[in-house]
Image (cartoon, rainbow, N blue to C red; front, side, top):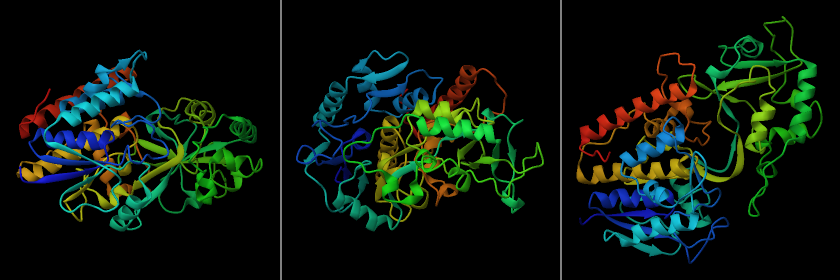
Length: 441
């Protein structure tokens, strides 16, 4: 075709976007600044470099990660087959030899006659149709261009609190209420007695933290509002009680009295299936978060759909800027893909690249647009990053079963329940791909 699409960034998302476009016979110009320039986290010269863990999470279909990968294969993924070809033993997870995986993706991209590789840093947006997939460590010059494009909707730190499912809370210990009974009772309250608070405080200040990378400074040194809860606690035994755990204006429905401290949970999605721990941004290791935060009354058996994170991560305020196909509402010739959109994780980033690539190809060719069903993991992620409900409080999100619509049936066994979710998702995606004549399954 005479049309050429510019894809900026040859990470997981950029490679998937380029691959999807080429599968429709569309020419692609793929820009990658390596090996001329490396970000502080990148070391290897190949494409789709995995900079942290070499695990792509669970492989089983009855998991959010496994379902996402199955959907990606149905959509024509490049990275999932490459990962399977270069897998290493990792129990129930799909883990890869990271260099062989990168080499495999790089070779397939370079061998594709419709994909032209342009090496060097991009400092200006190319004319024409563009997919921006520059990642969480976007270089300074491009970050400035994105900021100009997106206005103030660009963040440089991912400071997110843990998210738990409503279903997993102990309803005998928590209650809905607003402070001073003002407005609707939108918050879930987890009241603490003094002995419970002191035990929680002791474990929190001694819990193991994530070691920051050399190129990162702690977010709280830049912005006081990003203070990790454990750092706040370390300033004094009662500091949290005058901050996010203040009990003022709250009456414990069990005792009729004000609790010693209270943890509040705020709704994370329209369906009210997910709630985040208000003010609990944290730099604790994931296992420590599970251990310590499960000490909060009502959260003893909480199912964590996302753990709190605090690290360098450039991302845009997607709910204000993007449609569910990852294109800009204000300019359909510009799309975003990858972690810069607010999807969290390797495969989530790759999936967004597939969606952006397919959507762009369909617009160019005048084809019926792909409408990802909300019941699919890809559809749910796309809906999350584009939902105006999240505007103004947007934080990155990875694949999890909590963002899928409820199945409407109570199933106690988690594996069985998630199996039903997965079957529903794959059937819905299969029907949609049949509708548009693109079924790769």
